[in-house]
Length: 258
Image 1: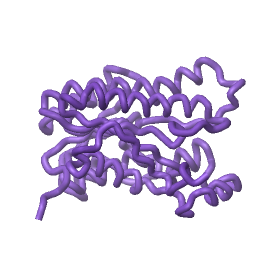
Image 2: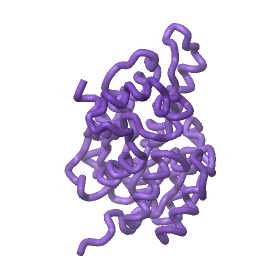
Image 3: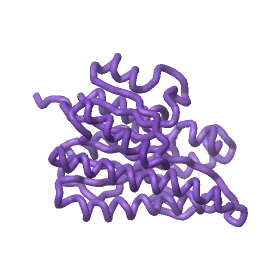
Image 4: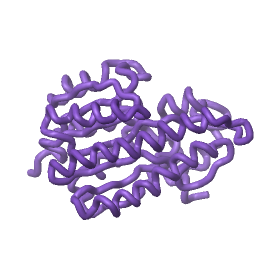
């Protein structure tokens, strides 16, 4: 029988304390990976044991938490460097992001810059720092979190769509740049996933509008963080050894059914 999919590897996950990032950390740990949880907050937004403590206890891997603002390049470098304690980074998951609904004509420069800094700059330099280390490790994988908003335009989400579209094309360019060096770079495009981003930051799930959205999803259910985590596990593992520069859409069929 083959061993765990990520046995002996180390993953750095930005935004790893909560939501999709927390689920990815669990999925990776369950398959043998040591984990660096890089986030502004240590406690999960949904409550419970901090992610790095949870995976250590439940899966017996090594894990640590690094306070990290992905718009701060020193923080990003520190998070990637933290993986050196476990043999160096093999998998980088640029998951941290913010989600806002905004009236386009009312968006000011500070709001625009903030979303670009978190959703684009953080991914760009997270990938850059990780790539340097992964090259030293002989190859690996980078997974960037985009969104279905990076595939289609949506009213009231112009800035968000702009950032996630940038992540999609950045991913393709990075795959071209880094593929010859043994680093695969892929993007995940989640749809409506049941996290604090869609219940609190932009209250869709649980709202009247959300009931309408649900009817546009062929699978007729909201996505769960575990659905995104399964995709991230596949892309990080050798099962996806010939998958590079790809967008993996995890939306229950919503994008391609309308």
